Length: 327
Length: 272
Image (tube, rainbow over all chains, first blue to last red):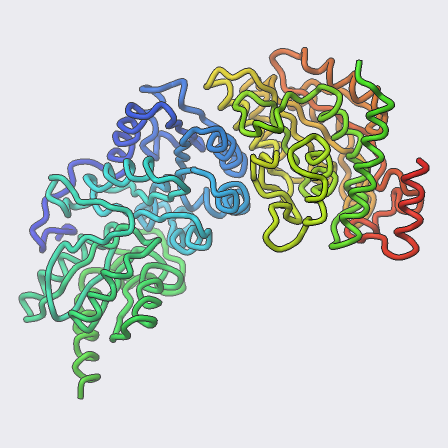
């Protein structure tokens, strides 16, 4: 069964990277300050369209990520809004020093597009996967982390990133994501979670591809008598603390779901809020302290414990723990 | 022509400032001393075009201190160029001041780029040149790097890209003082044939005596005429220049003279 089918979501109409590419051309059309800086991956990241549409504002800086970020900082310091396109598995580890010093400490207005994030590279194997990008970017204080859950939201996120004054990381993917927002307009405000399903028994906090999975899980849970709220936490940083606290108060149990290491990711950030504000039983669905292997996205999700079934199981456990805590 | 006697006096004062600043709260005195004449010529001999009272002037030339550990000499030059009061130098490395141990971007005081981790300034400089070209601004970018700093791969990524983009508004200056933190460069990580490396990367190369104000001025002024290629000036300097017992002694890289040593160093600079 495809992701989102159980929840009745329509399949995506195009890959997330293509949605990014179109959105980038849109913001570049609206704002002459937008430039695209490529790490020789434009045919993969969706930036190729920008090269055709605005050749004078497109620069292939080559296969040299450290220099790529330094050049981006130079553009940003001179009033431009550079969008840097690469794969996070190459860009973040290679240029972390430059991101920290030239972008984060300097507080410059650089936007990063990390395509093929999570496990969407599948058969390319573990070296291409990006399962630690939230943790890495999360270690750079001024950065905002955006994780669109479908193609409509990608467009909104790119626009919001361009308008936001400061560094932003946008996580993108090779694949098509189910239409969480039905292809219609999608509410999007940086730092404000979207409630995509109401429920009172447990809350599933998810982002990116896992939002579709969470909605599938919620549909299954409903058949099993559990009403799950689903929060699309499209902004992993800064986290919507209010939505988390309300979820803890209203539903008394939280499950987080992410296509990322559990350590240093969305779940850890949510747990920090509940621990400080309103502790409730929690379960964390994601990748446990390990690297993956070559395979399809679906195969990997099942083998490494972050499939729909894992979210359903975690939700039941959290609900049980909540009842146990009451006794 | 610049007033070279006046430049010499400025250089002496910058060296004294750097000695005093590093002696108080630490720093890298010998790395400062080797770049004093380079900074003096850039800021006071008409090489850089800038407006201290309008620090954000969009068409200003950009100076990028890639070897951020020379911050004390840089702050002294900025103060003497009119960006802020000389008394501010006493706030170097202190709480609440913008004069961090290594520079943090703050255009209002003339600091264009954040540095401290080596190898990054040239890329930022290239980005600035490309941005200025796109905005049709007539400006030049000067990047001062250390010699040991050129062991960083990013320097050569930037060198390759600058030649590719024909960034002829980009000038690198290498403070070739022949030492890195733990010893002589030739012993620790050979750079030679250094000029050939830059040439192979497509750069126009000049060399100068990095403590000769005339030579530095002549070469930097002439390099502005280079078209189609980025330029590098390899400035042959002496680490710790101006204080006999610190010169070419790499153990003073991150150590400042205090007490009697400080008095001797000060005396030598004053008489130099």
